[in-house]
Image (cartoon, rainbow, N blue to C red; front, top):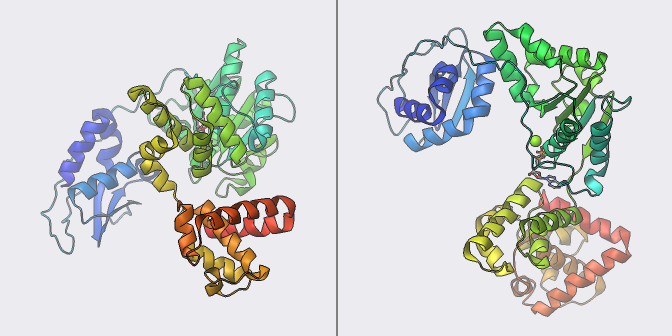
Length: 454
Ligand code: ADP
Ligand code: MG
């Protein structure tokens, strides 16, 4: 079975990559549904985990369904290097898999003789939609693109959650600078930085690598959090970083957290990273999601009705990449079948995506939480009592049920003592209205929502 997995992987990743990384894996123990794979160094473990981790789990699970988790560990000195181990799961003993023993690769991965940067041409300032959550980061990025190495903007540290536009802004800076001429720009992910650094060590060309890095005008490193725990690479980055800043070059860095929250990063690196401009990209708002969808729909040439855009912006709130992916699928369908985009078609085409985004809050949970919060009896959620002290929380629960579940108005009504759907509709608009007028009430409802969502 391990042999099977190995040959599948080899086919998928190609001979060179396979030899470089995957022949280093040794089988470790099996414990219940978990198998441990051993790697000789922490670097290799992290690398294999980040590049092949998911695929390895999938393959194991396909070959041996009893295996549900693949754990990657650094082999300790006592561990076997790579001998075939007897692999047996409790209910399904399996013959000892043999391991293909191959020589260590002799040729190190290639180090490019230059730092060719490929910028994604779709990611420009023009295609970046600006709103409250990202306007500051956007302004900083523009500023750096206009006047690199200005005091106060070096380094530029962009941070924010996944899919909120960090990479997009970095490419936009690069594109702008390259266009303005005679500026050399190097962009790479921290992962690639590490890969190149390690490759340079292997091929004994670290001097060359350092010189290349230190010869650029603008160095951009994306997803810096990847360097956490990679002490050598951090060290190298730190030196390069200092050398570049001292020579008046611009550094742009992105990460998923602010410098002060990036624990595991060396203190002096963290300090230096934070001493230029630190710009946070906040989670998107509904308004920004709508603007982004509008802009992407317009660019596609397919007519997407406003209510479809609103529906998507309501449903997919986590990150822009997913939002974009959903819209792209709709557009592809529209083009393919020549049918107009409707709300029904959207629900159909995006069925799987929407399901994944369905918050799994139940109406019962909402009722329970709301009743607790406003101190009423749970039974009053379905009772006929009309006293405001009872009716208001009930309306809030209906409002939240509409917002947080995919239930229809009649379905919601049924759960509230068989009320009519117009009653639910009324409750929803009443609560929305009150929230507009009464900030304290709005805050209460928002808090409730956040509690239920988390
Ligand atoms: P991050 O690097 O922060 O994880 P990306 O920059 O890769 O996110 O953005 C994910 C996707 O969402 C990209 O396709 C990007 O173009 C798009 N995107 C993110 N924010 C915006 C925005 N404000 N306007 C237009 N597209 C955006
Ligand atoms: Mg990114």
